[in-house]
Amino acid sequence: MNEQIFLSTIGNESNLRIFETLRQRGESSMYMIARVTGLDREIIRPHLHVLRALGLVDSRTGEGEQRNCTCTYWKMNLANSLMQRLVAVLDAIHDRNGTPRPW
Image (cartoon, rainbow, N blue to C red; front, side):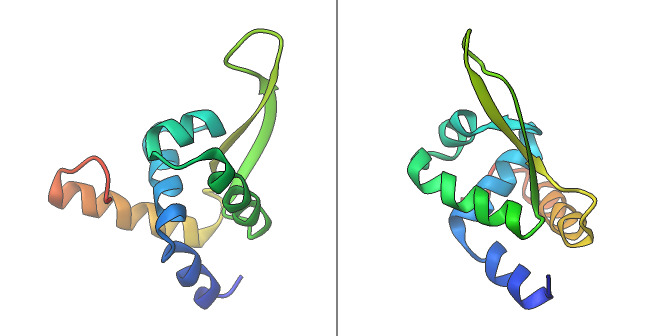
C-alpha cells in the first residue's frame, strides 16, 4: 500500500476511532469497538473489512463474549510498518496531551 492511500485511510475519523480503540484495548470485538467509539456497528463493519483488505488490521474468529456464539476479534497489524508509525504518532499525542481519545 502506498503512503497516499494510508494517509487517506487514517484521515477518516471513523478509522481513527477504530485505530485508537484497538491501540488502547488491543484485540477487540466489533461490539466492543462500537461501545468504545460510539459508532454504530453498521458503520464499523465496512471500515474494518477495508482496513483488513489494506493490511492495517487483522481478524480472527473465536468464542464470543456471550455463550454459544462465535465472534470476530480485530487487532492492529503491527507487522505493517505504516501501522507502527501510526501507533507511534498516537502514543506521542497521548503523552503530550494526556487525553484518552483524540475525538
